[in-house]
Length: 380
Ligand SMILES: *Cc1c(COP(=O)(O)O)cnc(C)c1O
Image 1: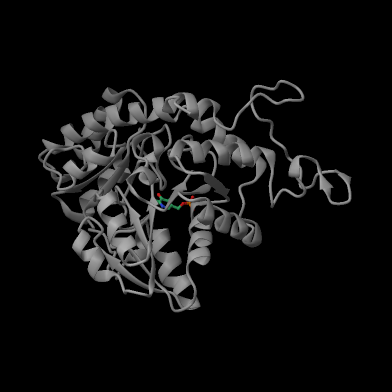
Image 2: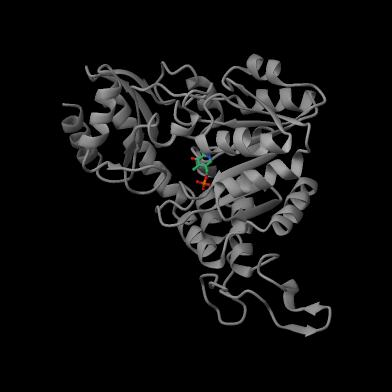
């Protein structure tokens, strides 16, 4: 199909219902489906863990947006990650993860999968040589990459890492949560599988938890689909419907997230209480050129460090009013948090520990002047 992104977000997988003409795919809130005869399920639907029409609509839409043949929707981003790890890896295998991975990803690998015999190495994914050095030939089955990374907004070169992973016989998985498929489509750069926490930008309204995997090949997609059913961490019909409603506006939301983030990054960059702004859209960001090569724009996430240390970082988070003090990201409303004590507290004392003077913003789509005024009073 040659349609543009916004058209696909609204229409892919979402034909009007053939029976009623309903324009929006209904919420098929049913666990089971009547069969026409023994061994003859109608339209292939038997049981909603295996397949459900509302989830199918979401899965088809996400696959189209990420340009892969097969998409799968899960109960959460971590459920998607767990399914991927256990599809691709066996005890004794090894994975490479970012040295500033999302805290939950780190916890899943280091505290859960490791107990089942999975080895791992944390590497700086913005440095291709560091990733190459972390690979254990023959053992490494998966190179796991976030770009931009959370919360330090590092940029990984997807095409370069795909080549490095493939040379070693490993797959490249990209957690595309921060960029969303509107800003970045990793399969086009050589990734084998894309993962989303659809809880964030894809859903976009902070009202549903979900995850997704999109495979670049039918083979991998079918193996993942087998495990999705066998392991059972599926997205329910109502959650799938909410996510599908959110995804329709992804393009317009992302453009406004980017507009607002660009203004806020420029403001923070010149602020005397701010020692460093981490935003890939700033020309002096070390990953700026790579980001410009593989992203349409630079996203709605900004982290910054303050001159007054941990105490001031915590105070800024507490003082903000319009920016809601909360974990998560990617919703229409702006959020602020202290990664060291909140989202990344589980990484304390590990190689993934984050600086204590760091503040993370998820810039929403409110009026930019209101957001700037709120930061001004919180920093002041
Ligand atoms: C939130 C998040 C996850 C985990 O997703 P859940 O939906 O919370 O399980 C994974 N990666 C990134 C980058 C995230 O922000």
